[in-house]
Picture 1 (cartoon, helix red, strand yellow):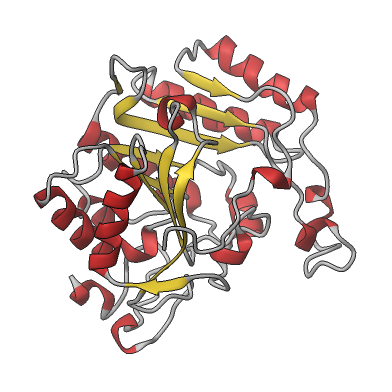
Picture 2: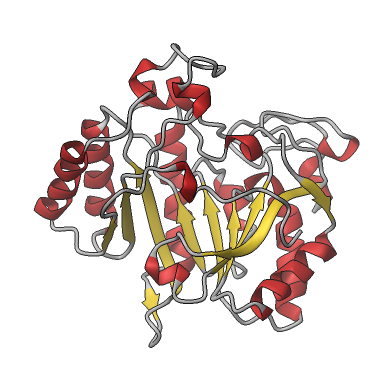
Length: 307
């Protein structure tokens, strides 16, 4: 599997760097797994978090690095501790022992070969809770195929329909096309949702869309595509928790003034328009957020807990 890192094409960036000898591409990571937190996480969709929490492993680095990222310190790779494949397997079982309903691999795209190795070992040692691959949606189909039979639940974002928005905020003008291809492969692997007797998801897909300020038209195009393509064979999570982080909204922040449209939260009226549109389309399997969720207090501490 290390061969996949010699000329890395794990994601659509296709950087072709040799990460085995320490070269880095867009995600900023070498062949070493780096993670910032492994703990019970209670802020996912209810069918994932349940009562005990989801066993979330937050990896360092990201192949999107959106300018508005809430986890930007780990997305940029500034925070993270190196671990081995074997240690990652141990972490899976430690989370299970803590009562985690599932293993939740957050932004694992840069480490798919290493994750595959750790999951294969865990499965051989009888890890028997669902595995979630939680990603930004900007994936290569060939990489997602590596996870077949190991991942039970896919939790991708569908961030943008507009190539202008995806270029501006994530330097990825081809985002929508690549995300659609990846989602099709994910659906081929896991199919329609399976919810257990305990109300928790055992298999299937939840596609997340984080509504950005001023982007209701783009959000509606995404919802229309998802529903026309998959009907209610997937869940859709419509999120209102966009938080203007200090690097965007603070005058002392690195990006202050460059993205003035991102310096505010989504208004209740904007969110209601998108949710009402989903209802009008006929979407039934959806998650919506009520109340005040756009707060930095919802962002976990990346303090190496569990690593």
